[in-house]
Image (cartoon, rainbow, N blue to C red):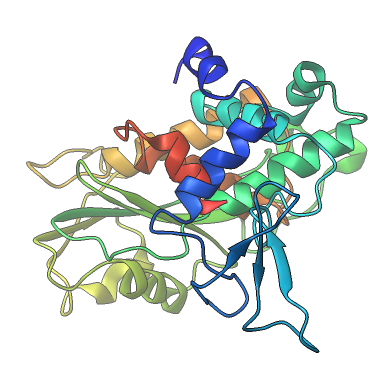
Length: 293
């Protein structure tokens, strides 16, 4: 949606709640606690319902459209939440919490930062289909280089690795979706576990680079590796350019927008970029985000 379309669609908080209700319960409202569909509207409060199936001592369980969502117990208007979601979805390389703080007018930077992280948690795809077709798997390292640190802040790496570098592994289906995870190490078992979790054995081709951790995939997958160290980047259909393009989006977002990302919250940032990438052709990306939240 353009800004004009967004303004027309959500003129007030009631319009936002109506949109959330329609996307959360497309077939009708049901109780989020017990799943009962025989609920009744609250007499005096809009977008509130009552369920007598799971109420206690004869009293009804009352719930609103916000229960069980990232908006529950929020003190900010729903329109402000929707505006932040729209900003995050329309910014290819993400939007910083400081910019959200300036544009929305939150009470503090910490509030805007918390809002962004709650939205990222809602965008995380917990249920996904295994990738098929031609799939590329690659790993990348996110974080600053030790040589760029001040002399009194340099630290020693272990085994020749850069300190404070975070490892992210991803799999991309050609002209399809991408799945990315933050991992702790580059052991063969870690790589193999990720591939078996997200890639179907029915793939027509599995492409990786020459990293030794992929060497045992061949009996189970139609595996081919491109040798970057030998300056071979594309050999027919064998390349990892798709997943590397996704890595470039994340890294440019970290460098240009966020500037610094901690290991603790890196999975949320990866989930945000993954959601935008997987819904790049989705005309209803905003509705998809609301359904996840």
